[in-house]
Image (tube, rainbow, N blue to C red; front, side, top):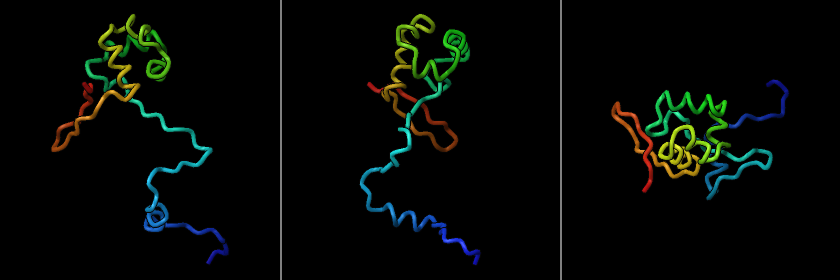
Length: 109
C-alpha cells in the first residue's frame, strides 16, 4: 500500500455509477460539444474546392463556423455552400458502412 487515499475506479464501477441516468450530465466547467463534419467529407466538395475555400477564408474552422452562406456561395457556388450549411446544422445523415465499404454522408430530404 502506498499510503494514498485516492482510489482508481474501474469500468464496471463507472458503469454502476451512471447506469440510472436518463440523459448525459456534463460538469459545468466543460464547454459544450460541437459536432462538425470535416470539409473533406462534404458530398461533392473535392480537393480544388477545399483549396479555394482555404485560400478565401484561411482555415477550415473559419469555413465551418464563421463564413456566411453567401460568402461560401461566392467561392464554391450555391450547391456546395448549402451542403456546408447542412453539415453545420445537422441536416446531413450518415449511411453506415461495413464489410469493407466506407459509410458516407447524405443530405436529408
